[in-house]
Image (cartoon, rainbow, N blue to C red; front, side, top):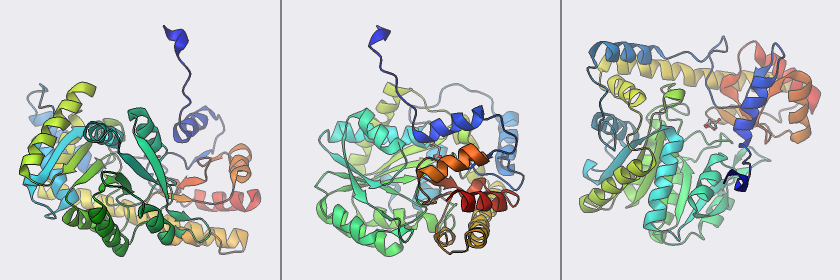
Length: 393
Ligand code: LMR
């Protein structure tokens, strides 16, 4: 039977991870996959996570199954983190998933069951796994304009013009904060306008929240989601704890749906549990329980928030220092946009030949579309990368 298989090529992020691993050069610099790094270039386990894990080792008495939706305490704590009091708990259905990718997948499967003819609208550009998952699930997709490469800012007019065409029951995928790959985020007014538009159209926002706490702050980053949740009767959410809890390989995430009323919530809750059963039965527990332990303990939560804030500020500092270094090495302010963008990613905008030269001649790895992970820069690599970019463009 295997002769019928066609090889699938990995997406550009996974491809680059492999190329980086295979490069034997000392001093190679990884600005590809979205992983936060400290000043020494390492991705340590957060202190709050270590403490929660120690607590679990000492107190956990069983690893027997939980429920198909995962641990209720985790889901409740995450509802608070994501939504605050924007909507009554009785309208929110949720289920744990293996990371943010698992959450996106489960939500898309839910959409396909509810509305097989729905079109899912994605920003151009977006994270490569968004279109891949939509295609795998078998839904239709369309793109809406999002980013103006000339200014390094949101293409507000283009986005609103394209989204004026969404139909009833269509799904519009939005990045909650720290847009991947552009780093250009929606302002509060954009969220407000989108909420009005989507509510009028009977379309459903689908907010992918993978970087809460990496943009403007933990609460501020949830602002747009909360605003839309308060105004639009049905909202889909995929959330990841990979980045803000540094739990990458533990796969902690959740799929959430805000429903019109408690009755619909009951139906959707059952569907999310059923979908989990079809795909992997019980979601991974360890990372979710670490998150619940942290969020449920005042001291651990304070430690975690301060660590997260340190990471966020380091990214902002990297952005400013890198933009300054590039101004010096290129004698232009063409990279000034890096300062204003948010989160781990920006599109550097230097073209494919320069990206290839950076990789081949300097051992500096950026995604082929020019996405760079600014959280991967350190004080010592900033001048090196800035020099190499000036030499490669
Ligand atoms: C990224 O965009 O680099 C991360 O979200 C990792 C991934 O799964 O692609």
